[in-house]
Every structure is written in structure tokens, then in C-alpha cells.
Length: 189
Image (tube, rainbow, N blue to C red; front, side):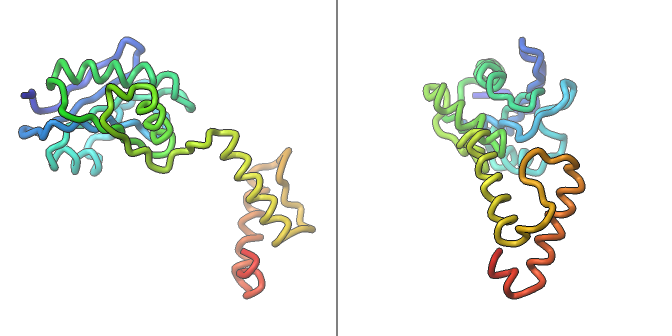
């Protein structure tokens, strides 16, 4: 059914891709979406990655491509389907294709299964910011507001228009450390 081993190359977009398949492939492809942006010369996963190694050793084929921008949704929506076409050529069509990604890769995975349901049998978007950037950043601002209000209302901790991010982060750590040092502070946390 397939040609086992490692296959790699460059998609027409310039993104690098990799495909790994075991000698006794079970017919299930894991379409891996990398959790963080990488440089144009970086592989979709590092050699010896234990997750990829475990999947391949368990009979699954794994395919992934690089994403060279921080918010890589648009490139993923063109690169990953192109990669699936390559998998069909080098391994043969999979019985099932499962999208999998962590963090930003989780967002890409959720988007891929919505946009290409005919290409994916299922998806595991892990720790993906599925509310979108605005929703997540609003939640983070809400948390910062609550921390300042309950733990350090009179402090110089800045919530917006932060002038010195390193100094502000150090102050936030100090506020949290101080709160953890007392029963009342722990209760407020």
C-alpha cells in the first residue's frame, strides 16, 4: 500500500514538508500542524522528536509542513491540502486522516477540519486558541484586571500601555509571590 520511510521536500509556497511512514503502515495519517512558527530552513519537526517517533513506531504515518509566519492560518489552509496530495503520491491514499496540532497548530487543525472536511476524518486541536486572538487577549486582560484589583490595587502594575514590559512582568511576579505567602493572599488568588 505504501512506500515506508521518510520523504521530504518543498511545497510550491516555499514551505518545507516531511512525511514519515512505518514499514507496516496502518493506513492512518496524522496531519501534524506545528505549534510555533519556524524559519524557512527549519523542518516541520525536529529529528528525533519523541511524539513523531512514537506515532510512527505505533503504525501511523505523519506528515507536516513548516509555517514561517506567526499567525499561519492562511498558509496552512493552502499548504496542508497540498501536502495531502503529496502523501497520496508517496504513500498512497490513507484510510483515515487525522489532523493534529498544539497551540497555534491546534487553531490550524480546527480550521483545516472545518474547511476541508472531505480530506480529514477527524481532528485533535490541542490547546488551540479557538476563540481567536481578540477573545484570548480580552480574557488575558480580564485576568490581569482581577489580579491587580484583588492583590495589588495600589501598585504600579500596568494593565495597558505598558512602558517597560520586563519591569512590569517582574512586578506581576512579585505581586503573585507575595499573595502566595499568606492565607489571605492565597484566598484572593
